[in-house]
Image (cartoon, rainbow, N blue to C red; front, top):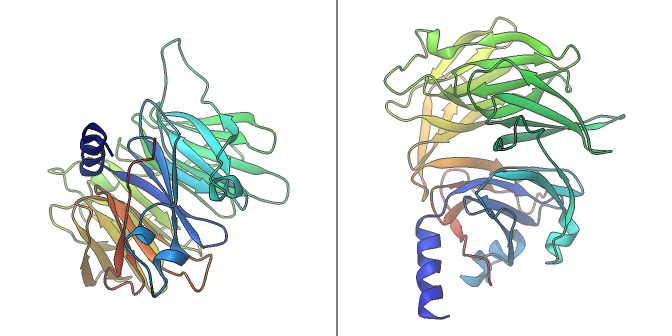
Amino acid sequence: MHLKESRQACLYMLHNVVYDTKFSPCGKYLAAANKFGDIALFSLTAALSPDASDESKCPIFSFHVYDQGGIYSLCSTDIFLICAGEGDIQAYKWSDIIAKNPKVAWSLSIPKKGVFSHAEINSCVIHQDSSSMVLYAGAGDHLVHSWDIENGSYLNSFSGHTDYIHSIVTKDDGKNLISASEDGTAVIWDVRLKEAAQVVKPFENEKCARPHIGKWLKCLTVDEDNYWLLLGGGPTLATWHLKTLTPTATYETPGVAQHVALFHEDKILSAGSSNHLNHWSIAGEHKMAVPVNPSSIFSIDINHNSKSNKVLTVAGSSDKIDVCSNFGYTAFSLTFVPPLS
């Protein structure tokens, strides 16, 4: 490697931010997306083997998706890995990526409001039923957009937020959609009526409000039974009862905003603007804070697609993606190196 290439590689790794990760449908691979518009593919089978080397913890393949910005969200079907961020939504077949020959299978564009308008996509999610497969995307134009990806047709947008959207999830078998925004609101949308059914404002609740940090919401998830809603960001992370829309427990991290969270078995895992992965009881008791490499965390994910490769990954402001085989500590780290030229 030439000196100039070496210097560029060092700068790339020092300033890397991994915004999202996704496990392959077979559970043998991990795809990671970063601020430079790149996807890196890691072999979990190789990284978890008893004789794994440092090379086993680097990408087996990487490729470039966007020239003008980052990839902020990944979602997956049994066939496609779907990338969203500073550009059109792009889908690649998992089989092509694993074969190290990625080609854009299809792409989707947000309708432009003007000649120069372009809205980044911060979050996307897929809902599939027997009749259709719909992709929802939360964007910087304050809208949630939707497409029928079976035929590539644009369906509609959901309007109601006054600032850009950080996160979206579906609930009730796709009957409802929830979006969390910089404006401090979480909107529960009735997909059939295409309108807001309910609005949650944690920044107005005395249990959750933290005006010194802000009212913005990024952390958003729903449990499998569609009973609890987790919301956090500027306001304190809290579980909200979905029937009454009242907070039932808070998860206190003074001075630290929670960006991501998930329900796992009988506990909650969360992470945000510190280098710790938090374990909580549902009732709000802080069980553990696991030190990790990223100084700020944007993605935590559990591999449910392979029993032999069941791990938790933690990614964010670092070239290191931490892998936890036992969720109470980091077993090792994968390294997001620059794509080979």
